[in-house]
Image (cartoon, rainbow, N blue to C red; front, top):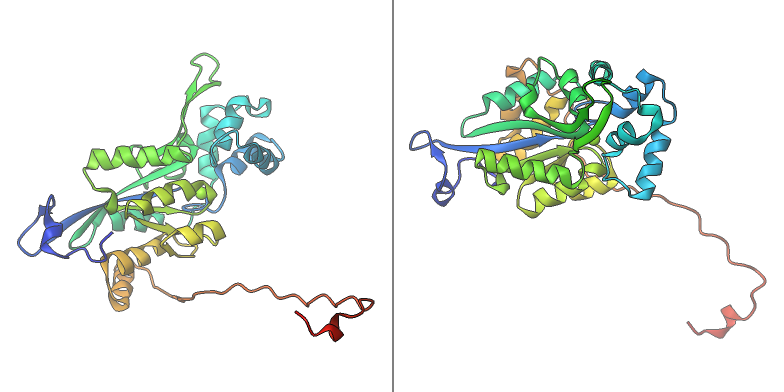
Length: 298
Ligand SMILES: [Mg+2]
């Protein structure tokens, strides 16, 4: 992805040019939902709601078996685990209402809707969480047509989930992005993906491999190594920082001004590259070994 949204003339090919000086570059911005826009997993919220214990153990067991793509565990449980058989559409909507969202998602969506001079953004949520959960959680913030979640098929009589129509997990996220790129007519190097966990590894590798941009919003070690940028905050608006700094090429003062224009203050901005070091004492040499010191040979 180019570092500047108003760069060289050869970059103008295929772009909509608003006037001679302004190149209107169009970026596809896709974000995960669970723990990227929220603080907790939809599946854990749903399990608490319907009174099913040991959700995380069930997910860990499925992950060990590699039966489903990472992130797709909840969809599998809803369809196949007897304890989840009672889940209905209204339970998913209620779970969405109970999800604790990160701060300032509305401002983040508004920023992407408005765009900035030289760049416009199309924003979508691409998540393995059931679509009903995400639509309910983001009601009034993001319309359903901008949300790609796991789609379930319900029995019209019982309301029971009778099939999984589509899961946006693992490679499923890649296929959604490719569909969106085709629909929007944006090249892969103008795709930006934001995620938090190991279910985002596949899609981030894919986006990076095609010169797009990836942002991690967690300290997940595997993801932090893959993502081109990492930003940690309890506010969803923080993702604007790497977008403006590293993709658009704005200076810090400009970024602070933009935050203020949204009624927000960039209170703390600590840039760090952390070396994580664990130190242990060397185990003492066994004393009963004779002859090593005197030999003089390595
Ligand atoms: Mg996530």
